[in-house]
Picture 1 (spheres, protein in one colour):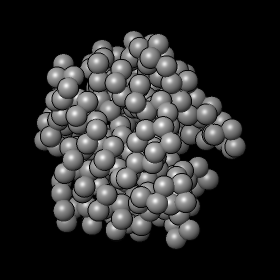
Picture 2 (picture 1 turned 30 degrees about the vertical axis):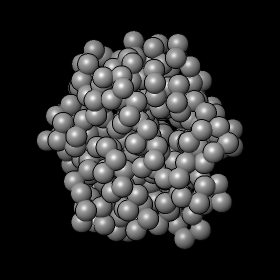
Picture 3 (picture 1 turned 120 degrees about the vertical axis):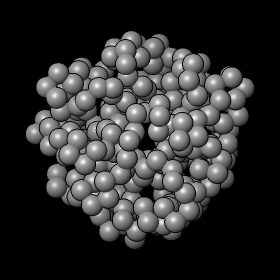
Picture 4 (picture 1 turned 180 degrees about the horizontal axis):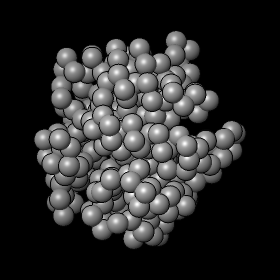
Length: 272
Ligand code: ZN
């Protein structure tokens, strides 16, 4: 098996400081957290922005500021969300990609009910535009899969040229409205994707540890951080993203996977 790539997802759009005071929400806090996670072993950082009230934001200015602060400290692979605010207009979801041309960005391969509260809309016209915009700027899509039908969509986009092989998948397991986080479902998803794909997975909340252990055993890559889970163990909040990353590193090493450096991750993911 190849070495495990650890992606840190430090913020997301959900948790606030009232949930866990260590959640980074300003550009400076996010950049410092990413650097700590990089030092702990993360090779990729998946970034979301927040506004002054910690609400989700797709502010291009905040992305620019955060990316510049991170780049002063390290060359971690940057993976910017395109879904940081489910109410944002399509052009706003693309603006930071055109501006920053990150190595990676998320591509949410379908629509769903979001957290039993609202709609998470990724219209086919938007996904087509997103896929071609990423190709134009040499950005590798990370295909986020919240449920089985989204894998099927990705195969359609591979056929039509919106997505290029090899595809990199991120299986999001246990999001309300998406596929339940079980090891059976994880194996099922890995069997649906093209053979030349790379893949990563994570479970939301209490499913974080079992899905991480199963993913490492199956040869996948892992995503770790407050976007998906704010606890270290049951009832005990994590002190930082880097504390969670350090545990992932120990687990990968104990399972004899080892952890990919940034340069090794670039090779595995086929980044230029
Ligand atoms: Zn995200």
